[in-house]
Amino acid sequence: MKSTLKLELREARHMVEAAIREAGRIGVLETVCVVDDGGYPIALDRMDGARVTGPQIAWNKAFTAAGHKRSTHLFNQAPNGPALPGNEAFGIQWSFEGKFAVFVGGFPIVVNGAVVGGVGLSGGNGEQDTACGLAALRALRELLGSEGHDVLVEADIKK
Image 1 (cartoon, rainbow, N blue to C red):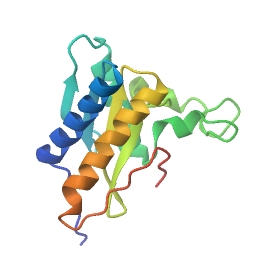
Image 2: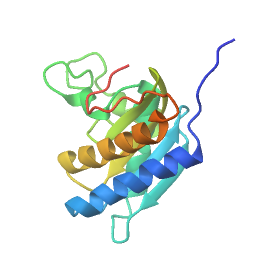
Image 3: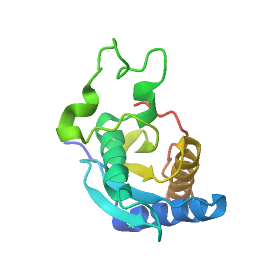
Image 4: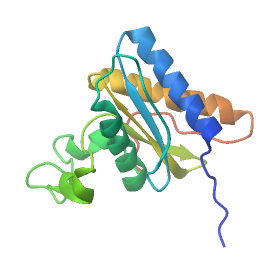
């Protein structure tokens, strides 16, 4: 048997709140979704005025990051991004009924070396989505650090 950590609502809400604070600070309207290790939403918020398409896109990014255990932008980063034309995973974005996201804004949530979920953001450009995603991960690290847990905070995550 293996013991595993499970992301809970308290942590997910804390991450969403941090991402939204960062979005307000940099002046972008974001939707933020935090999913569990199976890719199902725990918390999802769309800022007032954010695009109506944001919730599905943010969920897709979080789903992909959690399920495939890597930051979503790594799929199409030249020259070896696996989803680029001619590479081994070209077309993967059509998997899971089109739910597989291969562009910036999705990050796995890695605690003590294990992927426990994902966070996805939609609404800004790549730099803005990344800033808000990193704010969410930093907030989780601050929250769990006092409990002795290590949270990975970086843009290019591949587990």
